[in-house]
Length: 275
Image (cartoon, rainbow, N blue to C red; front, side):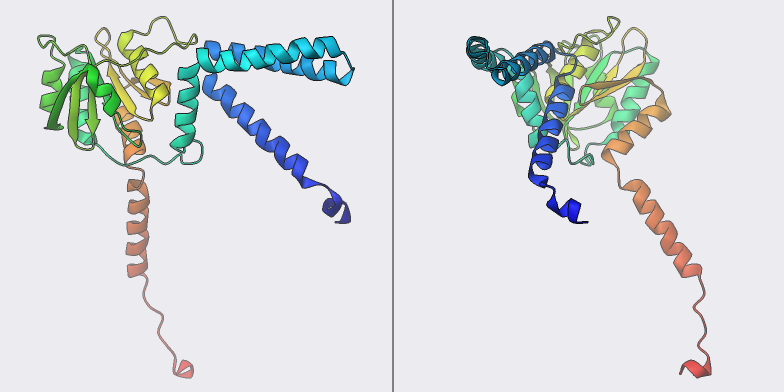
């Protein structure tokens, strides 16, 4: 016990915090060119400390200047990736895995299932914590209640806005024909089309949920935080979306079940000795 009290916990705590920061930074940048540059800078940092340890003053000076310039260049060149990291931290993505309830999920599911049956391509983004107003400029503003029929009509090949995305805010379609940034990840499959890459790229920068209906195969995919879940059937789509936007349903059903059980349990009768 005395040994534990004599340990200085401050360095251990600092090491753990730094390790977590590096781990999540690498995790966020995985699949981008920024990760390769970051690893290269970490190698230079290790060499810098080795040179400092052995007293190699000239090498320490050169590596120190390279690291200073490298950090500045990294911030300038990979500003979009760093913005995405800070946005994730700001929206509490690491510490709040529970998602906001919102959107007319049933109407969106019905529209996606019906469009999948006729191989009609679609891209639908559902807003959550992070506002999507900045992306509306590339599309057509639309304030209409979400309905399966309206979504199917928007993505009809005969309409000029069918190639863009629909953005849903709450139970309203806020905009249509919106253009999303394509993902620059080098780890994506070459079989993914523009809609899938746009969905991944959009969810890399925001916490929105993107649903993609493939025009070629009729398969449905869902992208969250840059991760794509492919080839979902009707039950799979319902399970994914309802787990994201209705996390309290199962808990409410359990509470209702327990309350009914409590009502069915007879109250114990008091004996005269308890009076």
